[in-house]
Picture (cartoon, rainbow over the protein chains, first blue to last red):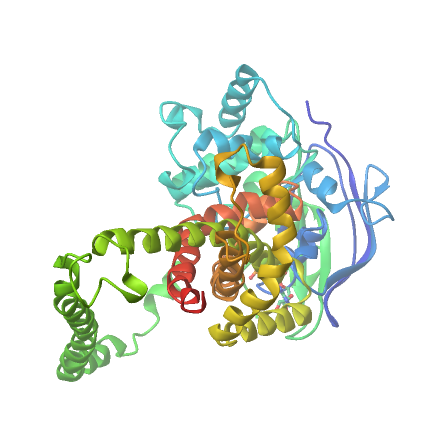
Length: 261
Length: 258
Ligand SMILES: Nc1ncnc2c1ncn2[C@@H]1O[C@H](COP(=O)(O)OP(=O)(O)OP(=O)(O)O)[C@@H](O)[C@H]1O
Ligand SMILES: [Mg+2]
């Protein structure tokens, strides 16, 4: 059973080389909540999200200054292995990315096999089933677990990616626009899923869909950017109902009511 | 919000595109003809070469080499017919190519992986350049290197193999006194196929979709695990081809200096 954790960010700056992409973000994300990141394109939502599991380090030159604590442990402390961080903080991407040549079952088990754990076959089968059930995909694929991951529809692939992410029992689940490539029905399926996953996981989701933010999230963070080349900033962070009905900052109000720009 | 999108005026682009396409049709046809013609020409030339070789070689293939005055002495002396002369050569080519692949392909793939996924960008550029430079070395240089360096260098090792592992048919004596062995040939060939296999593998590795690499990394894969999960599966269809063509292109040549 995963232990969902509190995330605390203190005055975080994110750079791509010399370019300051995100400036001065501080926020606390409570365990077992869903937090939505909203804001205009290019304001650094993905960039900031990736710093929560050090995925930004995959990009040459990207680095941070500041502090990210997960249950009090500094993510960027000396001797912290980013590989281990990513095993605790899972991520689902904008475009579904199952391993195309691996079977559906192997995709689910991919993360577990990384830990070099030799699992008895029956345990592996159980894990495949519970993970796929957790991702609301089991009934659709239980008869073709041996087929390649690429044989599924886009929405199914995305749920497969979620199953793959939760199979390793992470503490936190990051989702970067997980529904933007999906039809409304798959989107609703994933929103329902997020609602369920919230019982066990701390979830952070980036979305451009205001309705989605209001439907799934407990708290919402609005990011904005003053102009091209300027760093993105966290403008307002509050309960979702406050952000959408009674925000404190004018820019937030303009953005959520569609009067932006 | 959706009303706005719908009422946005059209730009008249589709009509332009249609007329543009209509105007381009004769040019399309000419180009299609040209490129199809060029492709066909390659096939025709290859077929012509094959035909020429077969026709000109037919008398030698058909002849009885023990009685034919042209073939019963000189380098072809002592062979009953064409096949008894040629089969060992074909066998040698295949054998040495296999050795070259076994030795060369893993090294080439290692170098390619280092360049594509481990080395910092500057170093990767320099290394890639060096490997391409290796491809520009004339094959006669490799041949001489094989004769004067690799052969004597391998002699003691081969002696050891025959002495201690001679009971394995592969290493059975008698040992070649000059060192002109399949192993020496295979090693020279391995170095010769290195550049082409490396550079093609590097190109394939670099094309691995970032999406799949990130999928592996986000699951907590180390770099090597990411390569196993994302890069190799993507490259698998591609890399057996460059290894083979690399050795095919090279294997005919070094035998000239034996
Ligand atoms: N790999 C990169 N290298 C350099 N700069 C980058 C890179 N990725 C993003 N940026 C820059 O960082 C800033 C924030 O980008 P980011 O992708 O985080 O925005 P976003 O809020 O996720 O936008 P969107 O809503 O379109 O996904 C942008 O100015 C972008 O140009
Ligand atoms: Mg983004």
